[in-house]
Image (cartoon, rainbow, N blue to C red):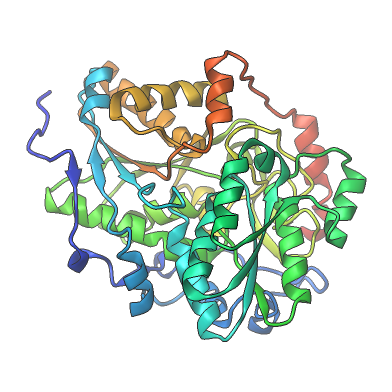
Length: 459
């Protein structure tokens, strides 16, 4: 089939073309996701409950299910201009290597010091914290991109930051830790002995490498017990997906300039921020009946919340101090294996993404990490960018879909999110290159044991 070769390798937008508003996909969802619950009462959480943990402006965004567009404050837009708009790239070299009739596009979010899309929400959360008169934030980080991003944003807006970094990631990526420290953050491997939650987790799981759920518990505990401090979250919650909608909005503006309408949109899926941000404006068109798309969420086989989890109310953290959220989950006690996609090592999935998946708007698949790194290697050799392990899950699915197009003789446009770069992931690449990388898939018994403990909250 004849390809459209009039499209440049990189489609750049001008600053004037940057989105001026975030898009709130919940406004177009015909059925909203279930509300968060207070675990003590099993009643919906209130604004006052959430304001003990988060900034007030962020809480308002979290609870807003009606406004389709929410204006991006000028100070945040000016911050975005340091690295946005990010390029949309036509993967001509990858297409050639695959000999596929498909057109492959990727939105590259790694062109900033954090190396990922995480800065989009970090800037917003730090800005609102400063506007509220707070002096510090706490957070968790898995692969390190979110911790780095919030470190950068807090340095810019003049806030102190404490980061609880998943212990195994801290060990795998010591240089990522040093970037955060360079921006002024205090970094603590999690679980740690500095918090009650951390000490309890260490007692229950001696020698554990930790998880995002563990790190969240510690960060929230410190936030609620420290004066003039709040917690910043890098994924999962609705306000984070809202901030990340700039990814999808820019992608749509760039593709519309050349009359390209993607047939398939693919994102890696851990907590849901990158996937939700990329698909939101396109999903809005689908929900409104304006255009149809296939959406594919790709997760690690070692932490398969969508493909093997249960749609239940669960805690967002291992220490069970957060509100309960209705989501696809492996259970908050589930400790994922120490794979090399730290940003996807989370037991649950965004309530928005979970609801859209549950209602049939999104497909999901899980992939093993050796297969993921094979895709990463091919992408690096053809497109010249070393991708993050998390992003490489989306690359794996994009390659597979492009090969299906070759097999079926179909010309389709495929868009995926390249969420970040992998230059701090050389331990992982070394294990892959040395043939020492293994694949771990949890058993049904492991998942059932973890999920069974949620039954009292799901009567």
